[in-house]
Image 1 (cartoon, one colour):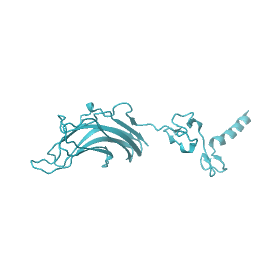
Image 2 (cartoon, one colour):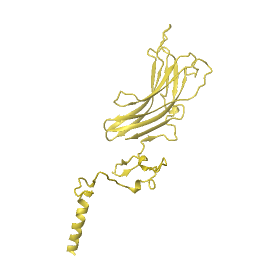
Image 3 (spheres, one colour):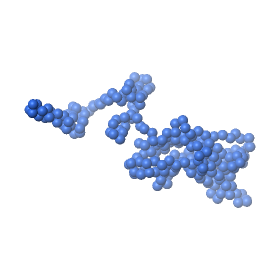
Image 4 (cartoon, one colour):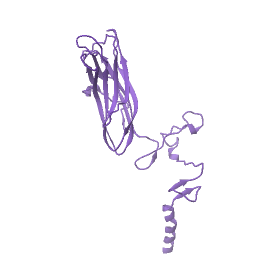
Length: 247
């Protein structure tokens, strides 16, 4: 009986500890597939067994042009699912009724013709250096002032949205619309700025991902101290979306 146990141990131990080679007798890793052509199939990741595998999506019977990214999760498991960090889906990502600084007013006596406001901040915590993907669609309405008077001076205003990040000076994901009107009969309604950007978070820690709104009227000459074009903008007045994920 002792001899049988010893034989079993001698057989099992190399299988547990040894490196495995396919097409090689000298494997360099725990699993080493050698040769100019080597393939590996995991059937739990195929189109039949995995909802994140779209299969032959273009229907040309050539699966080499229907490929899907493979990821490794925190347990070291292979997966086709890239989990999102934030996704507003069917909800309104920016609700102007709960955002006290979602409006911005550009005074006609403003010296540089620019007014900026903070719309909303998302704190993001990461455990290592990574890349953050952000997609957004952010609405706004534009008027002359907070009485909702129409702009009728035929002068252009630029309405911009962008993202700032803790410790960085760059504006990420900038998007702009230019608006001008010369009649009180102009139609009001939601405009949208949308953008996709990739942000490098250089180390572990918590970062503030802040959405900003900006009015830029430039400056104009004239008497009476008027140096900019009066403008009032309410951001987040429509159905907005935000999508974030880490890479």
